[in-house]
Image 1 (tube, helix red, strand yellow):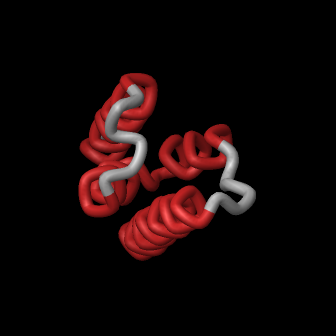
Image 2: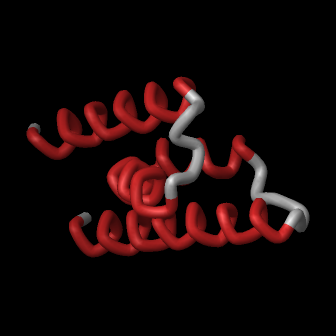
Length: 80
């Protein structure tokens, strides 16, 4: 399980960086639904780190809520 979480969080972090790059260049973007899915499937920590590192989606409350709730659920899931 820990290998999965390392991989999904790394991918999520990279996806946030790619989306920020695409936003700067005015190219087609990665959908918000896909960003949410990465978070829900275990990449919440990578998403939060990506938000702060790339300064991306930091003004959108919905991203904070989904990422924090997802992270909390994963912590509870792994705690048991």
